[in-house]
Every structure is written in structure tokens, then in C-alpha cells.
Length: 415
Image 1 (cartoon, rainbow, N blue to C red):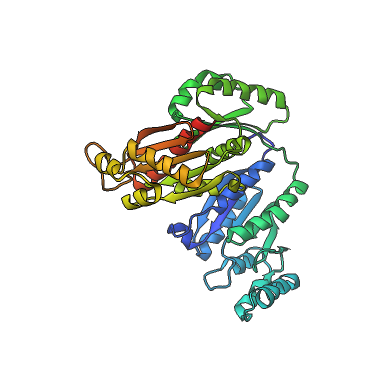
Image 2: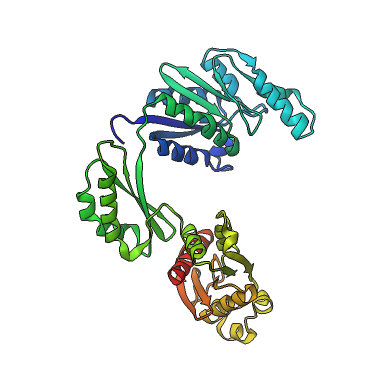
């Protein structure tokens, strides 16, 4: 961040956020999009549906940053108090916005074919002191206020609706109003080395970094993303690229890709370029790896499908794992997982296959195969290879770590 950076605060409203019933994905998404255009988020605050708490938060955040973005509390029910509060805070009165009213009528009468209730009509009411942001994806309009030199923008808490307003109206308005300096990022992904070991490896590199270029460590499930960032217009792209080239050379033994891509996106790119296909047989991961793959747009170009062979019967009947293999070595064994990989590859007629089997916990472990013990296998026309892993966490994290390590195992074999 430089001295000319534009700062923003994010306020999310709703009791459901404070009790953990709803995860606040809005703040993370907003912060990411603001960062792309050169606006730094200074603070993120979650507040419940309490009038005095929201009022105090608006006052405090207005003193922290020239931009305050608010999501939530704009629904038609009695606990949605944001709009009347904003009306008082900005000293206005509620009026009906004609365009918002037509939008509400159109949604209920034409799209939903449902009767329009009085409480739904109230969604077209806005404070007279705001500039209305029309909602193209829902009924509640957004509102743009200005007070004491601070911009306040209130948007619905529904992520899909909020994102539409941000991309169609808010971000373009910020670009027009502020002299924004875009933040330059260079990102790479590493695997097979922990954050602390990377930090030791990069001590001298960090010491030689100019003050205008920052290095961030972003760890996540067996991988660490390294990001160089610069928002100083006096630093050339060439200088940033040179520093990034040095960074890549230092971590080359652990480098997955020198772009801001996930592991599964990296694999997708490799397989599409090679015009190869993939199938996955999952036991302990329960379809999670297939979910990560199919979340990628265009994954149908290489991913044929997967089978969740959770029970032994499914391994035997669906993947043709020999019953005596399971009887002799167990469902969680290199021998079984190799046959799973070979079975799914032949069933799906793919170039490559990946298979997993393990003990995710909290029970089921033994002295020789404790909780967190995992077997993974890769199969192609020419070879089948397997390996074991040992994790020590709770069930969900063990599943996620298994997926990450399995995908990295696959990447090494196909890359």
C-alpha cells in the first residue's frame, strides 16, 4: 500500500453472521474485487441486527475510510432494519423509487407468477437522500450516500445480487471518481514444502526486495501460494517481472505453476493441452475431488466421470477390485487403491485415472493404519503407481488434504 491508496471499510449486517449460521463470503469477494482496481480494504466488520450497533458501526467506519460498503438487512421482513436506519442516519425520508417499483412488480407478476404483497412493495422504498442503484438480479435496490466526504454504499446481502451491483455500477463508478493506481500482482503456486520452510528458503530474497514490492505467503492445504505485489507507479513492470523470475528460480523444485491458478485448474490446463482424459474413483474423499474438478468451467473436455466406491461391495462390483485383494490387504491399501484406479480407467475408457482410499476419522483407525492414513493411486495405459499419506487432523481437514495431495500426485504424473 502506498501513501496515495484509496481505503475502504466493509460492513456486513445480520445476526446469522455472528452466530455462524451463514458464512460471510461477501466480504472476501468485495475485498478481492476492490484490490484488483487498487482500493485497499482497511477493516471488515460484522454486526448484528441491532439498531444502535449498526448506527455506531456506520459512524466508526466512516471515520476510518472514504468508502464504506455495506451488505445485508435490506429484505422485506421485520428484522431487516438497515433501510429505515439509513434513512435516519442520512436525514432523509422513505420514498418510492418508480424504477425499483416496476422491477419488483415485474419479478413477482411476470417471472415468479406470484401475488405481490404489501411487504414486497416496500422493497421499492428508498431514502430520499440516496442515489438509487437498481437491482437487475433481485428486488431490493442498492443505495449510494455521501456524508462528510465519505461514500456509503448499501447493497443486498444476497451474494448474487450484490455482485451484480458491484460489477455493473459500483466498481465503474469508483474508477470514474478516483484516480486509482492498479495493484500489480505476480503469483505462483508451490506444493510439497511448508510455509516456514519456504520462508527460510527466501530470507535473502525478502531482504533484497525493494520496499515498494511486497511478498505474501498464502498457505492452503498442502500448498503455498507466493504473491509479489506492487502499487507504486514508479516501479516498472520489468523490475517486478525480474523479481518474480528470481522467486521462481529459488522455488523451482516445488513450483506447480507460475500463475494465479488452483491445482485443479493447473491439471485441467495440462490435460486439455495434451488432449487426455481423466476418471476418478473415490472412497474416503466421497466425491470431493470430482467436485473440485467439475467446478472448473470446461472440465467436460477432459473429465469423463467418477465413482464413489465407499463400501467394499462397490469396489468389487463397480470397479472390479478382486475380492481376495481386499480380504488380504484391506480396503485401505496400496493394492486395493491401485486396482480401483485401474478399474475406473478401464470402465470409463480414459487415458488417466486417480483413486483414493483412507481412514478419515474420528474412528476406524488401527495401530498399523491410524486415522488419517490414506492411499492414493494413479493409473495410465503404461503404468500404475501409488503412495501413502498420513494426516492427523479432523475428518473434514483430512478429506481436504487428501484431495489436495491426490491432485498434486496426479499433476506430477501427467505434467
